[in-house]
Picture (spheres, helix red, strand yellow):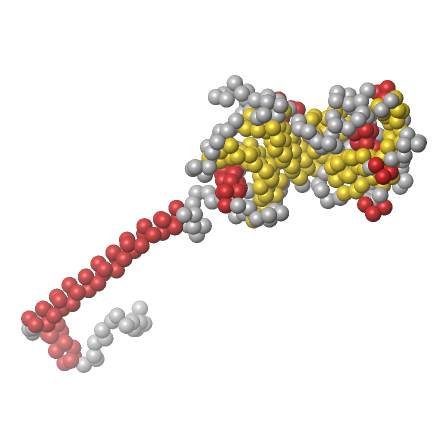
Length: 417
């Protein structure tokens, strides 16, 4: 208890002299001797008023700049935080620069789809579009981090807005196509395909939509609107369930005039080596005229050629017929053999090759009746290695090609082994 008290800057030490201590206590108890001069008080009051005016000016300045920041946010300034901002977009260049209207269409469809389900780091491409009565139906392909997406939507040219919901379908490692044409009634239509690969097997979707000027509806593989279920407000035209059910068991590959349709091979089982592919050729669906289509070529040239392509690549659904045309230079009238040159492309578009296919025929007057494919020769300058399944046993013999499909196909009595 006899320890000295600590010194602090806030304490006033008293002298050890009793006389000095008495004088200091008397001065403290007696209070101030006189007031400050009046002029000094007036000066201090003026300074306070002047400082108050300075503070008022500084507060008013941010209020003047607030509307400018709001305008920037309305113009799409990405520095302004929002509840949800569209993902940044990298535009993929096409063969020619896009026009301003095409750019607006692309932006509108991507933003409408992004609002429904955000993209991460997309690269987008305008595939095709139809313009009619102040509205534009567009097809946009989006390559994103996890999957690739195809978007269909209609933009109002006047407002530059997408009034109706967009349609979107997505696959892993996907490739898309979009073809515009007019149906038999002269109506504007768009055929789309989106195919991908997952777990070593192909999957995807396709469809034909009819553009009525303000919106679109499906003509194939269902009739109605695949954006809506068959219940609720859009129940009358809703066709989402039958659309999804169809593509759970089918695969469509782009073909001249339409698509070639594959169905699930009943012998396929997951984890089983043979058949390695789950798809087998079923039929074709033709929607527009093309000189290389099964409808334009003599029977059974197209499907025999497609059958040869599947057997050569051992990859059902993995390759498409790009063109198939008569090669008169290699035809032999004396031996009654015609040559058709096939140009094929892999589903991803990464590989192409050409082959000359030779068909025997019988001649009745001026009419040729083809017996079937005799043999095929891959052109050396266009030769590629056949696509192979992920698991192989050395030089395992390729399985036999699928049977020629029924429907819009040649009759089986015209086929040869």
